[in-house]
Image 1 (cartoon, rainbow, N blue to C red):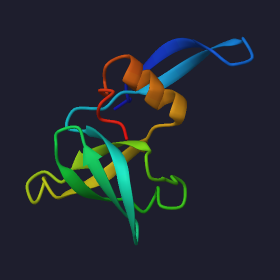
Image 2: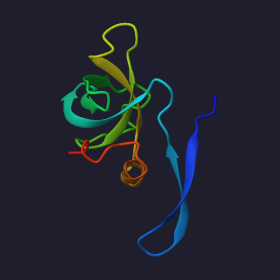
Image 3: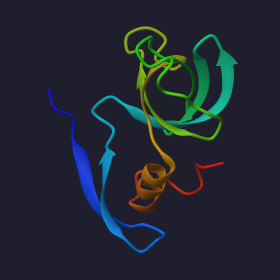
Length: 113
């Protein structure tokens, strides 16, 4: 199944125009912000639904998707068992994608640290 991306025209600091493709959260995913790195491929993420989850980084992303405190991420909660406590990292947004999400109302301004 193809992932939905939103294309937006943006202007770079040098004045050039380009296209920014932002991956929107899919059904069942929750946006959140990394609060702490616990080690062993586990992150502590504060999610938009009010929960603070321990999020594991899947093996195929472990060496490729580096995350830092303050990054905006998309989390897939572990539905069925402990969905309020655990989740899996689905996507990490870059800075320009995160500001686009904030500007277009996907993330409230009060939520960010």
